[in-house]
Structures are given as C-alpha cells and as structure tokens.
Image (cartoon, rainbow, N blue to C red; front, side, top):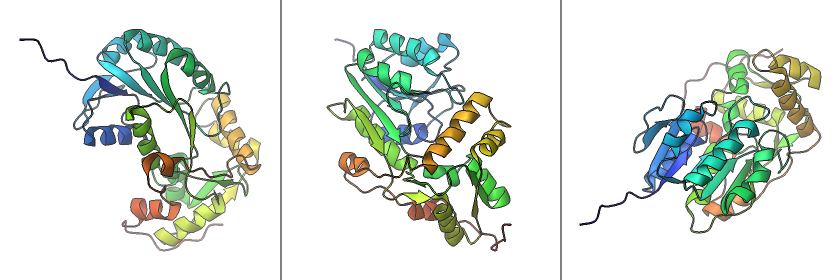
Length: 293
C-alpha cells in the first residue's frame, strides 16, 4: 500500500501581521494547508506554525519544506529588503516553490525603492507570480499604526500629505485579493494595484473618525522635514525620509486614484472607509468630543 502524500502547503510570511493574519485565516477557511511563519512561530488555528526570520537563513529550510506557494511580506523598517529576500527566493525556487505573491505598495513600481527590486526580479524567478500593490491601509487609523496611536492619544493625524487624496484600502480586501492570487488555477502574472472605492484627504479621514467615534480628530499637516524628523524618533533616518517622501508624493496626487481590482478578483465591492471605521471602532465606548488646538 503506497503512502499518502500530504498536499503542498501555502507558506505565509508575516503570518501575525496586518495582511498575513488575514491571508492565513482565509486560506484555512477555504481548506488549504497553511504554514504560518513568524519569528516566534505563534500558533494559529488550523495552520502549522513555523519559525522564520529574514535575517536568520537557518530558518529558511524548515519554513519552505512542503510548500509550493508563498505569500511574501518584506522585513519591516528595511530600506533595502532585496538584500535578504532575493537569496531566500532563490532557495524557495530550488526547494519546489512554484508560485510567489509579493506584498508591495501602490507607491512602488518594479525596480523602484524598497521591494521594487524584488518586484522586478520575481518574474525571472517564478513562472507563477503576482505583486500586490495596495494603497495605504485603513487599519493605519484604527489598529496599532503610529496614526492610530496619535489619534487615540492626542486626537490628531500628523502627515506631510497636505490635502492630497488617497484611496485607502481595508486589509481584509487586500487579503481577499492575495488568496485569489495564491490559489486560483491561473496566477495573475502581473502587478495588481489594490485600492478602496474612494479617495479621501486626511482631513476627510479625520471627519469620518470624528463622526463615528464621537471624539474630535483633526489632521495636522507638517512640512516634509518636520514629518521626517518626527518619524526618525522611532526608525532609521533613511526609512523615515522615505516615508516622509511618500507623504509628499501623496500631497502631489500620487495616490488620488481608484481601481476595480477588488471587485474584479473577488466579485464584491471594496469596503468604504466609513464602514471600516464602524466595524473597527463603532461598537466601542467613545469618549466625549474633545477640542484639538
């Protein structure tokens, strides 16, 4: 009697992160075998927890064992992630991974900064691939991002984006697109710009947060240099300058667009920002409105 071979797994890097956790949950619900990878191999219901650290190549082999698809989330706060990602991807290809889906950003094209170098290399490494280029996350204002923290602590959003509009997208919609790209019979073989249904200024974001939570939130615009110096207190200067530069590009209209990617790949419309805030914060006890100077 021949041995039964286990189905190949989907390896999800950053499995406890904003998109990775949602990708794992969706894959598990759909009945896929999932390896949930992170630095601490945190247990995830329905998935196999594995330890993975971009900066520890000794963790690569165990994470890749038995996987034929991988969801790629770059190391955080690195301005040059290709340095560690490209050697890992070469090992992934050699180990039997046939499809790779990379989380990038709508602000970064192939060959551009940060994961742009990985984006450019991906088609040469894998026959089946996709690059997700989502706009800025709605969760930045409701989760554990610096904007969400400043909203909770001070009732302000600090950016160098001015009145520029951004088509913020819910991480649940990004995850839905990612799962489609990972599991559909045919890989997209392209980059996918993923946005919400409407482009909003940060002042409009603040107005929605104020309406839903009952606590006054205001957008406080900063100059590029002010934003960079504000960020450098919590990250390397090079990374702070890059993020402040993205804000400046937003002020010039770089993210003032919407796409039909979510509806085309999932069959449903992307969530609006107001609906996201209602789901994330609307059922919490809110403080009385406060005045922001």
